[in-house]
Structures are given as C-alpha cells and as structure tokens.
Amino acid sequence: MSTESAGTSAAGYPGGAAPHSADDDQLLVLTAVLLTPARFPGVLGDDYPEVCAGLGLEPYEQGYGLVLGQDGRGARWTVVTDDVSLVACAIAAWDCGMEYDLSPHEDSVVEALPGWPLALAVAAPGVPAPHDPEPEEGGPAVLRPPDAGRWGPAQRRLGADEIALQWAAWREQVADGVTFVEAGTRPHPGVQRALAEARAYVAEPPPPGRIRSAFAAGEARTLRVDGPGWSMVARTDDIAFVLLDDRPGEVLPVGRGPELPGLLRSLEALAVRPA
Image 1 (tube, rainbow, N blue to C red):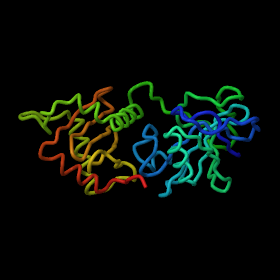
Image 2 (cartoon, rainbow, N blue to C red; image 1 turned 90 degrees about the vertical axis):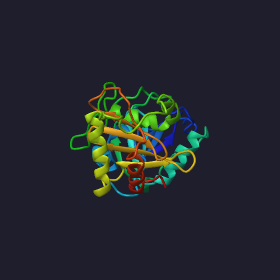
Image 3 (cartoon, rainbow, N blue to C red; image 1 turned 30 degrees about the horizontal axis):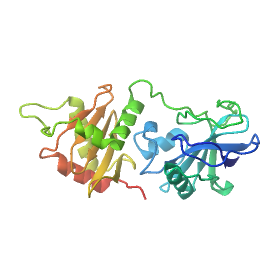
Image 4 (cartoon, one colour; image 1 turned 60 degrees about the vertical axis):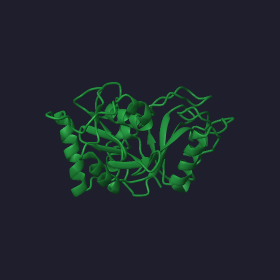
C-alpha cells in the first residue's frame, strides 16, 4: 500500500497537499503517531509492550511510527513503519503548522493493519466517509479505538496525559499547603497502593514505558508513571497527581512531604526519555 498525504492531521495541521486522484491501494494520510518506549498513545496501554501486543507488533526497542489514513474506497488503515525518524519529523512539522509529505518507503513498512486504533475526527477529501474494511479470513482483526466514553483504564490514562500537558493549570487548583499525608490521616487506599507499587518499581524495574520522563521548566522533569488501575503525573520539583480506576473522574493530589521527592528521583533515574 503506497501512501500520500491528504488534508490535515488530527490536530488540524497540514499533512501535505491533497491528491488529484486516489487509487484503491493508496493510503491518504490523515495523521501519524509515534510508538516508542518513551512516547506512545497512553490511551492504548500502561506500557510500551502492552500497546505493541494490542497491535500485534513485537516490542522492538527502536519503536515504530503509526500512519493513519484511508484508502481510495474510504476504508480506514493503519500503516506501521520502522522509519521512526520520518514520522517524528512529520509530527514536528505539523505541530509547527508546516506542510510535510509523509510517505514511508515500502521497504520501511512493517504491516498494514485494517482500522484505526485511535479515534479521528477528520477524513480524506474526495473519497467515501471513513469505514472499516472488510475483515480478511486469517488476517488481523480490525483495529478500533478503546472506549474512552466511560471511566476506565483508557479514560484514566487520557486524564493523566492531559494533566501532564496542562500541568500549570492543574497545579494552580491545589493549595500550596498540601502535604504528603496530613497529620493523623492516611491517603485513600488506592493512592497508598499506587505509591507502594511505584516504590516497588525501584527495586524491580517495570516494562519499558511504564515510567516516562519529559521536559519541564527549569531543571525539572515531568514523570508519567502507570500501573494496574492507576496513573501518576508528577514534577520532580513539585507534587504528584494520582488517578484511579475505582475513583471515576477524580484527581488526587499527593504533596511533597518527606517521602515523595526521593521516590520521584528514583523513578526519574529509571524513566525512558524521548530521543
């Protein structure tokens, strides 16, 4: 399946010039995402191997690029490429509002998977509306986005991603006087469990991608840490926020106190960072 950029990315940035015509086997690119240990769609899983397994891919250390688009009949397809640098360049250009013709070379295509693993609100011009292709006997199952319409692991991880992106806004909602554990009280049992499991990662490192580190202001880093039923977002120089599967829609702050700084330093030492 060949590729050609068409229209805009999911974020509304140009993905290249629209084609004059489209063959049935040509992929009209709508957007792309990275799938690496340090950067992957959190909605799809708690760590890199889990996301790869859900897509039927081997969790190679160098990672992949996922190119989402439609064929000439309008069917949804996800092309998996091992040309991570090409996809990263395209995403960077789109984020700057620049055009970029994302056309992975055929030699770099690992797999063409039916469907989309993520929900998109855009469509290629000049072809039928997005729809799933007919499944092929013995072929891979059609990819569909996780149900993020109700609270659960997918929604919990999306919430944590949003906090990481909008840290300043969330931090302003928390009083400066928050402490790790208020005197005479204990945090929610789910928060205790999340912190205990995060501490256990220091002794026994988890699968790649379960602890990720990203740039923050100054010399600080933003940490994203996940585990079964919980997600944590923290700044290495500040507090943390915990989200739990069993506390729908709630964001639970964890103050600095005497313990959190050391835990965050230890987690940062284990975290994977974007190249």
